[in-house]
Length: 114
Image 1 (cartoon, helix red, strand yellow):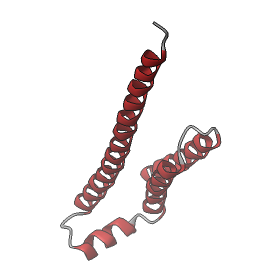
Image 2 (spheres, helix red, strand yellow):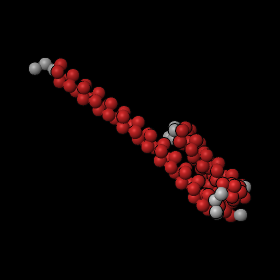
Image 3 (spheres, helix red, strand yellow):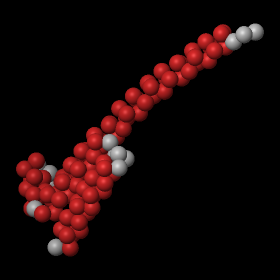
């Protein structure tokens, strides 16, 4: 019972933190959705402790812990993929800005009186 209570409280605190960070415009909506899914999953698994066992059995996992581990690894891989996409976009923006700044400096140098 203590584990259930811990995970319910953990899920509630996570949701409250996500809502507060969204309210302060610190966390973007696309990341908030991910954290809300994680907190909801923790909440569902805490309220219905037999759910992970049933799901893992129906998916063919030997033990429930293997299913939970695979679920966590999958979520982490999604986070890494999302962050990789963001880094790629930012690298493109940095390259464009650096080229524009170089062209701007060159134009300033050419238009300076000698």
